[in-house]
Amino acid sequence: VDGPQSHAPFSARTEIMEFGDVLIDVDSFERLLYPYFASGTYDLLRKNCNSFSDVAIWLLTGQRLDKRYTQLEAIGQMA
Image (cartoon, rainbow, N blue to C red):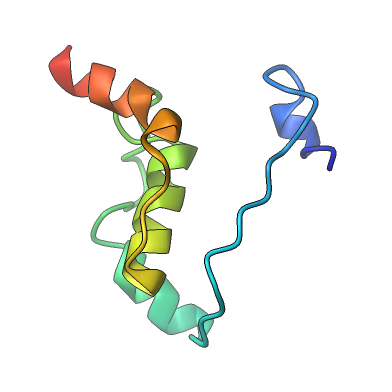
């Protein structure tokens, strides 16, 4: 699967992982995530798109992303 244009400099491929189905409305989903990802809190090393995906998956399914996708955040926490 080709990734979105915004990811083109990083990789030509996007990996799709299945975590199951969850029924939740957009407002509830936003309320769950807002405390962790309020506007202006993005940080390339500490809170990036992989961080968002990991937290969203955990809140919705109780599962986590493989650690290989969150290594940058672990390094950022040490800086």
